[in-house]
Length: 248
Image (cartoon, rainbow, N blue to C red; front, top):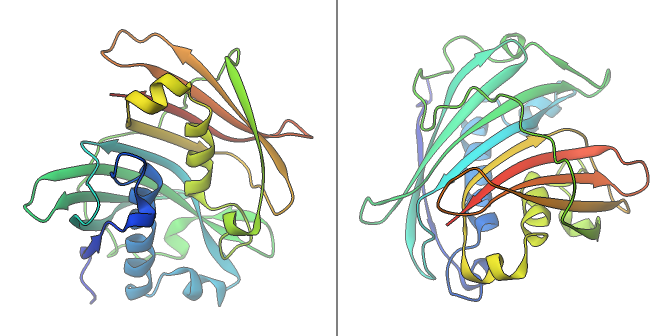
């Protein structure tokens, strides 16, 4: 049987870096998504495999702890594995290190299988066999509900473009995080970096939609600022994603 742990190497390209020459958070998330997709495909459980059965994977939760941001040209290695499944959810974890073995990030994610014909999720065990999991977490998280943003300090509007879409013709998961980060105050964006990102995906956005990224700073007594985020549909108010970020 195909190995349950995948290691894949990446290099940080110039178009993946910010004004400081460091990898963007969204670039790191794209490495995770790419490695997860390749590994699922090797296991016979990739998006193309599920589409043949009129199903697809849907990302429900993400928790990413970023230890440091690698610079332009850095070689990094992503290690990923399916870490468990229960009911309608399957978890996949990640460890990322640089070429010298120093940690870059740790992450865990929760996924659901969507029946495209019925537009509802199905039991993961009906699609994924019991052998496809390693009982090991890179980041312990039971995925409790994230706090609700009470009052927005600022809002930014975006329009969904074709470049934001994935194979399902819905907004790619990393784009929601990019929208959320853009609403953070300028002084924080220029001086700090997101060290801890938690995301709960609630609903889908499609081409042509307008969305609102709202942010609220909260005090949790830590060393760096913490923000709550809400991505919502501009016309209907439907919550699309809820986030909490910590900066350092």
